[in-house]
Image (cartoon, rainbow over all chains, first blue to last red; front, side, top):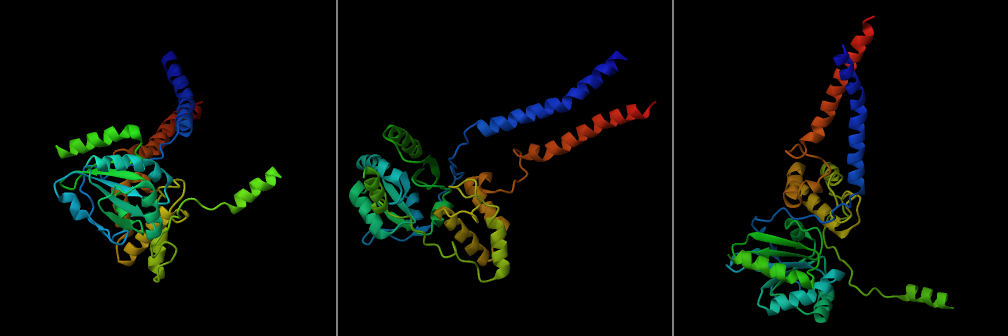
Length: 182
Length: 135
């Protein structure tokens, strides 16, 4: 008899308990700062096929075939209108000076703006492809500028860096390039 | 006076940065074929803008949303199935890009929980009603 009463009391409090648990879950979700970065899910997958025209006269455009030439490369998605891109420029310049091949993809940009940007911040790029409609950016799973990808010699995307490369992050990029070489 | 000078500075300031320039044919133009445009619109309303993450790409004025709209419309014009376009984007950005949840190993509790709770409520209430029915 008393056993049954115990069960019914337990059952009486269950819905309130469930509601409380749900409220805690909602509060936790609301108060926790949401991550704003959307990572590409193409890590470990081959570079999408694309051909981009040259972003500036007298320069080579970017064809995805260069990523299968046996050497790991960096792909930097950037734009002249993007402030953090200017902030990461010294880091890219020092990587280029160290002999890292960096391919550029300029997103939704114009030739004149790009020329001014490179004159001001330096030009670490082997090639610069003009992604005027942003399709290659979407094909790469990139959700903003700047972003930098490490691509190994077989054209497999090995690492994605979201946002500008800060001085203290250069070592990570070099490490990832070394891993891509193995 | 200082206030006036400040105001003058604000009004006369030149943008120091270059402008973002979107060169995509269908970012702000509808498709000629109304049936296709309708398909594109339905899909665009259920895709998330990656920069302004609370908005769909149909609602957003962010340039990347324009790129995504043009991609959707061009592919639909070429005869691609809307769900194939969604799958292409999900392959790159994960489920996050779509507002329509898929049934996966991660999301099944979302669909199972209401059924489970309704079942539980039914069991609890049934026992209660039965007790009341007995004099």
